[in-house]
Length: 346
Ligand code: MRU
Image (spheres, rainbow, N blue to C red):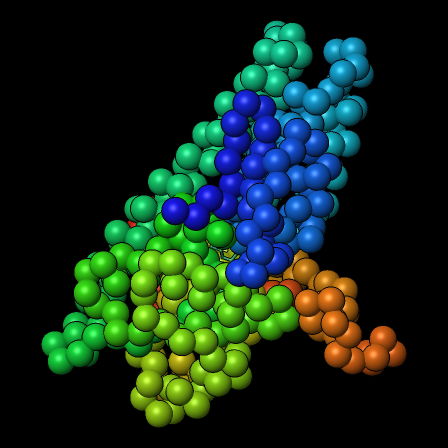
């Protein structure tokens, strides 16, 4: 059993994903700034997990506060702002902090600080529990969709499905989103093989998805990100399923850089391309993918691999962490409350 995150006796525990699969380092902290740093450095990552950890970070900030009640509000506001500044694209983070702020607003006047900290801790635990349950509903819906979509192929053989980045337990704390659907389809006997793209530059596919698939004994192979077109051309991929970090109300979906390229390859070869994400990834405040903030990260993530410099510092690079796949290239969006098809209206 993989434990991506836990919260016990007022302490946040998480698996530091930066060193997987070579090292399994579990970190345990009471300090909200350590949680902020974990999100920033991708020690914890994946949209739903970022939301879960953000909720716990707010809770840790409140329980760690030692000052007077009259000074709590500015402290809380600053702490939440620090948490919200950790990563920009995954909307789950802001969904979680909005819920924590609502609890603060509701109870601040009437409760003393220990009571308020307790109310915030409860809300963080509820966010975590809900995300885990969302994965289960999503996987059940995704399985039905797979059975319908691939009905003809499934009459003669099992499926070869491409996925990108990591969308499993490490990204959600639960079964996973895209990987949750794959897990359900594997258990139903529908999967011949998962094709996981390595996901440059931080290798979430090669390091994390491969680790989870191996753990579950699901047959897989890892390919370079650029190989999906070739494999589709050869008929070796039947369809694609990925997660998302933020979905606009028109269905445009941001996900790990490289997702759009897979969607284009799928479109060119008439293969279905699915997004799987909980409703906490839908941003109802934005109507188009052009409004989604795309995180750019330090160039050394490209030029230094596992501590080893592979290109001189002077080489100019751009390190975009996400891209947006326009809704028109998405065959269906699988959520925990149902599957949506074009034209998307959330
Ligand atoms: O930069 P990361 O590793 O946080 O990016 C993660 C992804 O892009 C995932 O595909 C996405 O969050 C969906 S996770 C269920």
